[in-house]
Amino acid sequence: MPDLSHGTADDAAAVNALRSSVMRLGRRLKHQRVDESLSPTEMSVLGTLALCGTATPGELARKEHVQPPSMTRIVALLEAKGLVRLEPHPDDRRQKVVSPTEQAEAMLEESRRKRNAWLASLAEGLDEDEWAKLRAAAPVLEKLAHL
Image (cartoon, rainbow, N blue to C red; front, side):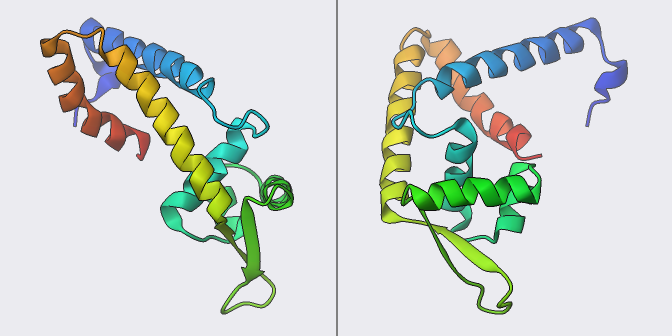
């Protein structure tokens, strides 16, 4: 693994360009929402639930890097909107398990479809060599996103 703290000027420029472009794309993707009434954090929680199926509020707080009281408020808002269900924890009666509703799953699918279509329309501006490089970079970006 390269040590970028002592890297070349090219490495530093690449890291800077990656940071800047990922942030810009992220901001632009956030505007491609299906439901404007949900905050980006609420959408992120629903996305996390879509990946893991169910989780306790504490587990969600850790995965989303927020404090447990904040997650409790977010889950309450999502429950009030009919997007999550709270059920008793199978092993610990003091806890609840959060799961997405069918409404949340349908909304997430529509959101993914809309964002994918937007990205695909951007990619139409790439030439074949750029598109090949982007396809090759996608797994590396995915890995970075989960480190």
